[in-house]
Amino acid sequence: MSVLYCITYILSCFTKHSPQYRVLMLGRVLGGIATSLLFSSFESWLVAEHFKRGFEAQWLSLTFSKAIFLGNGLIAIIAGLVANTLAGTFNFGPVSPFDAAVCVLAVGMAIILMTWAENYGDQTEGKSIIDQFTKAASAIAADEKIALLGAIQSLFEGSMYTFVFLWTPALSPNDQMIPFGFIFATFMLASMLGSSLASRLMSRSNLRVESYMQVVFAVASGSLCLPVIIQFFLPDERSDSITPGGRLNLLGFCIFEMCVGIFWPSIMKMRSQYIPEDSRSTIMNFFRIPLNIFVCVVLYNVSAFPISVMFGMCAIFLAMAGVLQRRLLVVSEKHNRTKALASVEEKMHDSEAEPLNI
Image (cartoon, rainbow, N blue to C red; front, top):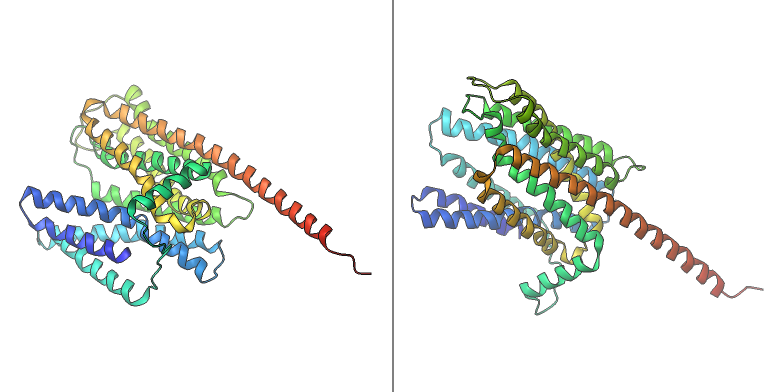
């Protein structure tokens, strides 16, 4: 599936050279398929291979944190600089970054083919896509923890993807000339800081991910409330550069990006704990169905509401994620207590069943 991601996204990049609308739409469809594979197949392979080799479960936290720090942070900054250099400095055109992406994807696919062991998962015969989704839906319905985790992920990621479309008009409501590239790099640095902080938090044996993520969701909700508050107390000013309200928004957005950096390795850690291995990839893609519907509905109606309303809605969804995170903590603690009690009773039963050696 990881190789399929590389192939699908390479084809998507090639479509950027076509001026035909249908070809471009096909490219977007391929890009959407590749994105779903990106956020499911690699993580599923990593978790399966990790336990297959007998590594400590705690090491996953460090791996996830480094992946977010290097991938979502450092590599994203470098990729942005390379894309800007190709398209701007060297004047290779707006499609040149996609051509560079093809080269990187080809190298990545070669590395996967040469160094990765295949993880076939559950090889039950006659298992169609419908059967896989039915099994995933049954697992979600049967385990409240999985359902809560999926709802939390959809609420946070939906707010995050909506934020992607809102931050530029929020900082430049009157088309001010501000350094968007530098601001994006600042966001990535904040995300790297968050992933580094997550690594430290997850390394503490006395602190559960479910506990500190409640605080993270509360802080994220508060950071996206800033544009709503500023709208009332600091009206828009005509300026050629970023306004005082825009600076406050920028501060809040950096805090939100730091929360994003904490979120990714933490949600990956929780998924490795709660989602069953045999249907991990299918369940993770199942979670993306409400997420994609949510983002489509929001973007379709984005012009119908003021930008402050959109940020307020995202803040509410993040607060809801915090409430569900609290519920997940309660349910998981109850499950752990029940499991521990059952283990003690089983040991007592075994000891009583053993004959006395006289």
